[in-house]
Image 1: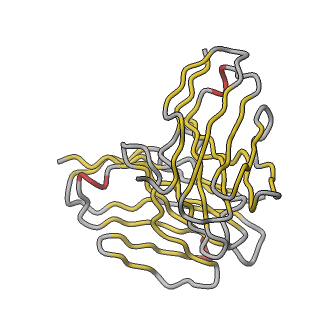
Image 2: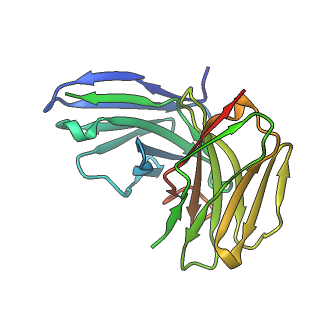
Length: 112
Length: 115
């Protein structure tokens, strides 16, 4: 099983719908992240969390919210999805001292 | 502000050729960290290397090597004797902290290695 698991892997939804992407990890890392990947734009940080009580906005947090339910779980929500939120979303974890990110397999979201 | 530029959007080579992927960064910090990640066609992102700003020694790992030059703010990645399995999108990234918070990624270089 993957160390960082994202669900769902693929989702098609309609404008205005609420969507939640879930991430769970078995690496025991405190730090978790949500990134968005768009063609030609690389990866951009949406939110990150250092522990269950510490959540921080990233570069592109508008239109998104997150919840850190436990050390191992970090969810990303789109309260009212819009078409320009169509993208590939990655969850990642890291240990505090190495800087290496461990990514999930990605969740492809399409908003019609 | 921090910025990473990967000027090569796509590169296509024939197997066994050497190929260098360029990465130029901008930062005002004296302490920073540079990374390379690989994203194969399957989509997952794989960590390749992390280098701090105080270590300018070149790194070699098998067919992969990295050339860090502070004088030109570059952290280039060379694949020697490329193979089809090297086909992927490669991302260079920069952080001003040892961890991965506020990691700034370049837009990526898509490498295609043809048989």
